[in-house]
Amino acid sequence: MGSVTAEDEDLEAFRARARAFLDDHADRRPADEPFVWGRGDDFVGIVEEGDPETEAAAVAAARRWAATRFDAGFGWIDGPVELGGAGLSGAHVRAYRGLEAAYDLPDLSIFTIGLGMVAPTIAAHARPEVAARYLPPLHRGDVIACQLFSEPGAGSDLASLSTRAVRDGDEWVLDGQKVWTSNAHHAGIGEIICRTDPDAPKHAGMTAFLVDVHAPGVEVRPLRQMTGGAGFNEVFFTGVRVPDSHRLGGVGEGWGVALTTLMNERASIGSGMGLARGPGPFERLVALTRFVGADADPVTRDRLARLYTTHVVNGLTAKRATAALRAGGLPGPELSILKLAGTQHLLAIAEYVAGVLGPALCADNGEWGTFAWTKLVCGVPGGRLGGGSDEIVRNIIGERVLGLPREPR
Ligand SMILES: Cc1cc2nc3c(=O)[nH]c(=O)nc-3n(C[C@H](O)[C@H](O)[C@H](O)COP(=O)(O)OP(=O)(O)OC[C@H]3O[C@@H](n4cnc5c(N)ncnc54)[C@H](O)[C@@H]3O)c2cc1C
Image 1: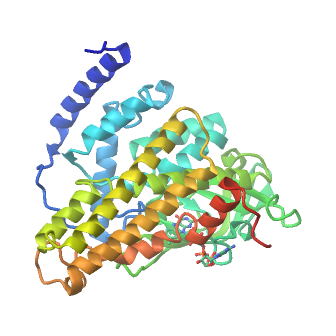
Image 2 (image 1 turned 90 degrees about the vertical axis):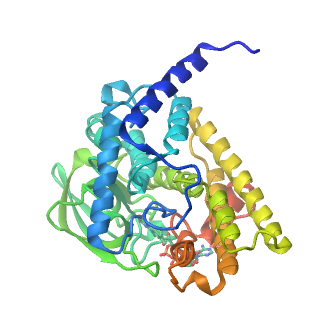
């Protein structure tokens, strides 16, 4: 028998405490729970219920659970104690997540952008007092954050953005329009990149801010998608005032701040693409295959085996990347591989599901498993764009990871 280290014991004690907390506050999922694709199973962290009342209830439930968890010391496990975190390690975070997955809890994907992308950017670039003001409520679910980058004329070429910020004493005045802003209709704050020097070279003339989404002059208009939901929005800024204290990074250094967010975005989207909530994606596919009676078909079994292989390889890549980040590494361009691999895998799943279900994919005949996958099938093409399109991600991998020649400008 190997010896038990102090850290093992500490982790075991932590696990017991976490289990007791979860048992007190939630029900365990039945081990044989059948999977129906539905509420809260989005794969890019966008809440899009379609019906505003159901959506509001889902967001309220997510906030309640985030607050309960935070107050019990499990909401920001590796966060600094002075800001309300538990001051523990990444191993504790992973241990808790492993336990929590077995319980029937509200979907927390509404917090994915805020915690996966905006919070790390705040930690890296905000003034300490601003970080202390926003990081605890972001982790407690009191504040939801959105990412205000894309514009009608600036998507892949983000540095072409034209939303202006003009300095006025201790404040900045914002005018312009953002688009495709996921969850802006639920957000309290947004990370925005603006043009502050129109005469500078385009990458040098931008500055990042944290903006209050409820400030006078901000208008949020939902956009409906082909999934049926309206998870993202157009956001208009007319004379919106932002204190200089809410600047992220230096004046003219917005591009570097944006890169921090984008790298965390690719890592966060890629690792989150395991469709982690509830039974794993592979179990879901197996259940579906058995249900429609295709599990004895050799071609179907072969396709399923291929999907399983990719599923395992992607999981290992995500683990390696997360381990490197937790060891203090910065998110690098290689994390783009996670995003691309995750998207390709979801496309393959969508294709498989469409093949196995046949017409039942889009005809709701009331039977278990039918129709329920349409949200995934209709949503995956969006995954090929959000967080950097497949082509852009391939360019990044080619140029910055493999060292291939740059694409012609
Ligand atoms: C589900 C979803 C959620 C999103 N959430 C947010 C959000 O919260 N906040 C936010 O700011 N934005 C968000 N976006 C926007 C997203 O970042 C943009 O859609 C993306 O950057 C692409 O920009 P675009 O849509 O303007 O397309 P374009 O940049 O116009 O691209 C159109 C096509 O041209 C290709 N292309 C462009 N340039 C090149 C090139 N150099 N080489 C090869 N091909 C190229 C692209 O790959 C794409 O296929 C979201 C998008 C989606 C789909």
